[in-house]
Image (tube, rainbow, N blue to C red; front, side):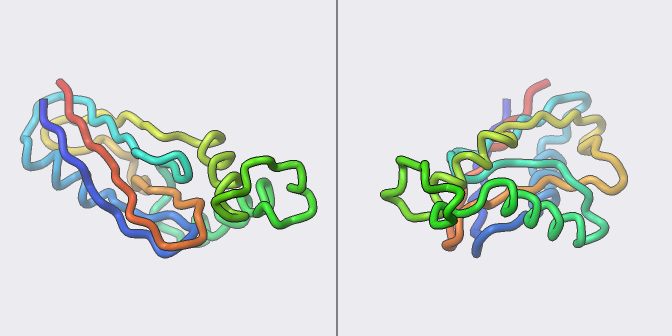
Length: 140
């Protein structure tokens, strides 16, 4: 079945919407009923389906995860052993473990069956710009 890899540039922590790219891939394949599997090939970012109407949702999610898992230079994180890649790296791995690296989305008639206000996001957890690879695999 069809497979493609998207490369998504990021500029720091936050949610990066790639719903249109995923929908475009699905539309090109023109499937009847299928399942789109979305997989991120990294351990310091994750995937989420979230509201795409109010940007405050994204801001609040970023703030929540920053409070839940502060950077490694925060005194509360002094217990971290993995610090060689910077103070944001191990916290990024923890955030990724708390979220998802793979999601499945049903497809019908060439359309992602997302809800009215749902979008597909890469959730970047690192501070520096990255180039993230997201694999889209359509089965049906």
